Image (cartoon, rainbow, N blue to C red; front, side, top):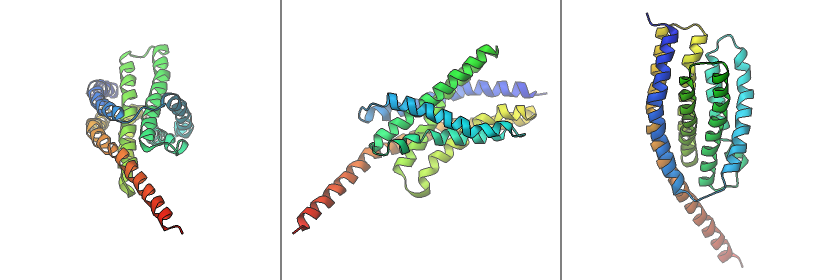
Length: 243
């Protein structure tokens, strides 16, 4: 008989192996796009905004901790954290589009890193299995790649298509959190294994979405260039038409 604890151990093994590999592929696409954009002072702004994003997300998630169904916390955390990563789009509105892309990616990295530091400290203090540290390290990369998927679509698409990446990231993040919380809700080993399989599907789709999104992000500079040319053309026409 498959026990809930054993099913969760299988899931964590999948996270470390398959999740780690998929995350590395997503990071490869991210770094390729990152290097194609101009240099900018992203480090300080991303760290500060990442810390702010984590604090705000924690406040949003707090009420879910007291709900009788713990699995609901997965949806609260997935939604809050993925949206908070987009703070640079509001806080740095005057930045170039490619710069906003870099800032969002940086915020996601620091949010994941700061969150991991807290969890790893808890794992060590509570003497939990050390393989959980590997799970948290993989999640730093996942946090980053999910944000890459979100922001690539947001900056280049129009209408509802802009939110394809965000929708994917929220679902993938939520499903990642579901199996451990399902254990807390008393789910059977079979249910946890089924939820783990669903989460794994989105993990395997993550590098595909990252590739698509980073390819779209390549259009950011082109869009800005065309926008600048249009603005310059309109200004020239105004000057020409002036008496």
